[in-house]
Length: 450
Image (cartoon, rainbow, N blue to C red):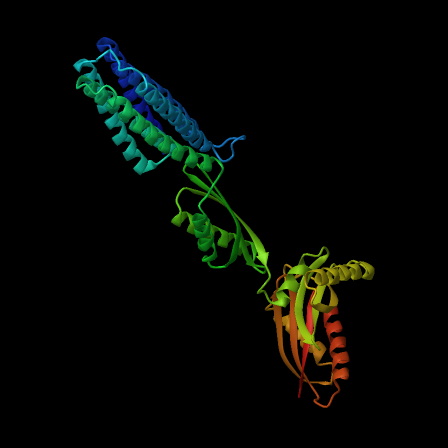
């Protein structure tokens, strides 16, 4: 779009500069002060158009080390300069009109030759107005708007010059000065409006409705809990959006990245020309307590694995229980220090938990060449179990690969009259014997009444 603007401004510059040359020559030839004055205005308009053209060209430059958001603001700066120039020229018209209304009537009366020069300029101004108006509707831009106002002002001043020449020939000596005064007031209003808009753009003003629209799009994306803060600014045609979204605390990094991509895609589909940066943060508000505990414990240095996390309430107080696996080579003191850190972190992050019970276990890994379907392994386990007469029936023997842990679950039936204490001691003993035969495995016997 910047390239299109520069082409339009180039055409506008060549057109108005030709008007300056024609008006100056015809004005000098016909001895028309009004036409000569209007030619000076056309020259000023040419200079301002050139400034706007350079501003639009500089705005095309891509981002660099010193302008990471690009150079789009230069266009707004060019629009501001153009608006100030219009304001100054309009004030000059007002001053000159009031001054001439208080002076004696002019003695130099221009003729038909001056009117022809003015008509050429009117044709040029109409051409510029149509060209710029179409470009503004199609591609927009502060520099094009500024040049459009300049073209409108130049058209008005040229009409005033011609009307003044015509009225003078009919004996109304002050007609052109009154018209110039009215035109000057109108242009002051237009220029102030342009200066105000471009100045706000340079201060990074953004529509609250647009910000709310971005927030609604983000929150409506599946997986997003909230979107805040949202920082937006505009540079040229591009809207830069910096948004922080809240996701469930147990969301995986891959899922969070996927949700972020969806938010970015949804915003770009609804709002064109956007450059979006998305940050995501965890929100634990509606996440189950056990999931929070699991996430906290996994972040502690020295923790290899966590499983069997549970929490319960008793007499209005909350308690948690979990199994933590640490390096099997470390000593008890080091393992205990890890558990102390875990308790401290849980207390800091979840103060409603009254006490945490931590079961420390050695970390074991699945052997690379282990075959979970190995029938020989199951037979070896059955041989061990058959040595204990207290076991009335051997049920299922299931091998599970849980993350990087080899877990073997065994169902066994015992005499229903046997005390639970006796069953616990017996299963612990059997588990120890099986574990000695199958290295790096977690053995669990599930007792059932026979």
